[in-house]
Structures are given as structure tokens and as C-alpha cells.
Length: 505
Image 1: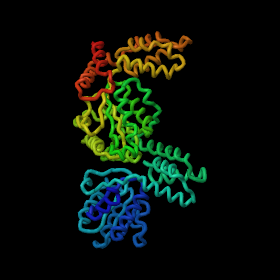
Image 2: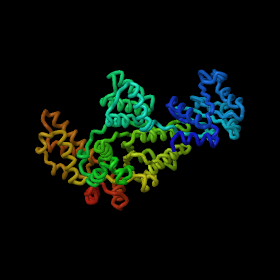
Image 3: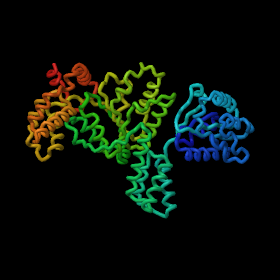
Image 4: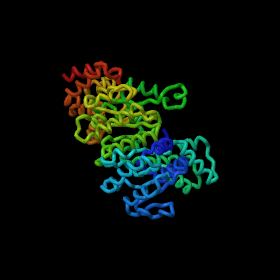
């Protein structure tokens, strides 16, 4: 349900106190004013701590620097007069006992009156004693139609026209920004060039990166890695390549739903994070990285607010890739944590969104310890597929050596014995192979020569792979995958894992 429809429903249903968390104060106030007109031209009263009430000459300045007095105006108006009282930044006063008590008294009184109190705040911060009387309503970021309307208005004001393709690019790149930021960056573009141009898309994208950085929840991650940079994992790569066009309008007309996401489970250093970056590059979609730890805040309700903010931002930027690295560490033992249920509520909000989301946000989550993940995370419907990424087989190790050496020594690749390198490095992960190549380069550089196959083997002999230092945990993971509970990312994983287990033993 759109914000306007839901807000008007709350007004008609006489929800006494509505709490709207948003940083777009001007835009939400315009939406409230429009709703008030449609609801029989209700009076709207705006208050802030510095200037008191504004807009009505009879009450101008009333309640200035006095939040309790601001609430008293609600009682002073005749009981039959329909009105909406918009109180800005009121979350700062909710901890005050007199304000909280006054709000609870008003909540009881307004059940029989056509009046509503709207609290505006940049974040959700609700004391426990007010949780029953406040109703939180989310205010979404501007959608494509609203952004296009603003662009049309701006173009009309400047007497300019744009090609439909460029206009579509500007609309798409503006998604995820507040209307104030969109206006600001477009004004900057016009001030610098005199008109809007195709190059201004990059200006908008930079503003978007700045916005995402300021949330301190999501990171706009540059994705330069390609599918060809992944050595092995043929089953996984085939699965991804088949879905390359799944976000197009042609796929919608065919009847395909948007892909939901992918859970990559496996041993550390086997290419899970690399795969997330390669997906974004191959599908030409922005890559957002979520650090789940940043969702948790110290104030009551702050963690849940950040989770909703993350979801809202990701959906506004859709289509996009949402990369969640090491999700098992964030939600391990979710039921047993002694944090007043905050982790459980954040987890519940997150997996409910995973199951019910309709927006084209493709979630790529990685995990090293499958046993630490709550069972609800593994249920079908959260992700399109769960892949196990195990230790590379001999053929895959050869492919990994080839990928790295083609990048490091493209002119000299044939001088390296890839077959021998792959054979002599059993139990090595992709990350460990990259590390021994770096060590081999140090060996060659220190002797003022290029590094050789022998240098690589020397470096490998000095590195003890994780498969040997954590063999019990890895054996449990391999057994879990071999029991058919998950799809194998590699065609050779089944045989490779058995060989590697035997070599560990």
C-alpha cells in the first residue's frame, strides 16, 4: 500500500499518534498536507522546538521551546474540529516523563475525536512505555514516477528537452536518493554546464555513493572482477550465466520472477566473496555490501530502524546486488543471545523480507560455518539456491594458477608448469594459492630475477593450508555437502573432496 493510502487509512481509523521516521521533512509534510485536503480539508498545525507553531496566525509561536505546551494545543481545539498536529524532531522529548504521560493521556482522549498527532523524526527511537500508543509508518524514498515528474518539472523550467534514453538513465541512477539530494545534484549539474546532459548520470551516481557512505550501513562496492576470474566452480558459473538476463523486461514478459538470491556456503578462501563481485560485474548491477554488525545500535529500537533503513535503501536502488559477507557470524546462536531479543527481531525482519520481497534485489550471502546458521535461513524460498564451495580439485587448482599467472605474467605464462603446481598443492584453497604466488614473487624479487615454478613450490612448502590446521571442521562441512543437502558449486567437488579427505587423513 502506498504511503498516502496507508496514512489516510490511519487517519480515518483514528490512530491517535503516528510516528513517521524520515529525513525528508519537507516532502513528508507536503504529503500530509495533501492527505489533509482529501480528508475534508482538515487543519494542519506544524510545530518545532525553536519557533513553536507556525502557519496559523492565532497560534503562531505557541509552545515555543515547550513540548508539553505544544501538546496542550491539541486539547484546546474544540473536540469536533478535525486537525492534524505535525511535531518535528519530537523523538528528543519522548524520554521526558511529563511528555510521555501527556502523550498517553492524549492517545486515550483522541480515540473519540477527529484529531491526529504526527511525530516526525530522522530515526525510530521509542521508549518502551510509549510503544503501545505510537504507530510507526514508513515514508519511502521517491519512486521512479515521482523522480520522473521532478525531472520533467526541472526540464520545463529550464526550457530543455532530453532524449528518452538519457532521461531513463537519470531516473534510474537517481533511485535511492532523497528528493532534496536529487534536486541538489541536478542543480549542480545545471550550474556547471548550463543544462542536463548524459554525463550528469555519473554526478548522480557519485551523490548516491556519498549517501550510502553516510548511512554507515551499506557500502557502494566497485565490482571489477569477471566471471572468468573465477577458477573452477563450473556448476555455479553455469547457474549464474543462465540467469544473466533475468532482470530484463523481456524476462518479465516471459513470466519469470526476479531472481531472489544465492547462499554460498563453504571453506574460507575458496572464492565466495569473489563470486559476489563477479555477479555484479557480469549482470551490470550496482554492488552494495552490508556489514550486518552495523545494523546493531545501542538505543532501544535503533537496530530495527537500521534494518528497515537498509531494506528501504536496497529496494530503492534496485535492481542491485546486496552482498552479505560471513552472515553466519552475525546470526550465530540467534535464539540464545542475551540482548533483550534485539538480534532475534533483526533476524526476523531480515528473513521475512528475504521470503516476501518482490523488488529486484539479488542477495548474495556467504557463510563459512553452516552449523552456526539458524535453520530458518536455509529454508527454501529465502534463496533461489544454496551452493557449497569446497576445496578446489586438481583441475580447478590448475585453473586458479592459470588465472593468477595470466594476470601477473601474461607474457611468460608458458614458462610455468601448471600441471605440476596443481599436483603439488593438494588441500590449498584459492586464497592460499594467491598467497604462495605473492611469496614466490618476493623470493624472485629479492634475488633480482623473475619468480619460477620452483619458487612457487618452495613457497607452498612453507605454508600450512587451513585444510590441515582445521581438518575436523572442514571434514564436517565436506560430509554435510556430500550428503546431498546442498548443491555443489563444482562438477568435480564430489570426487575432489573425497580425495582431499583421504590426503588429510
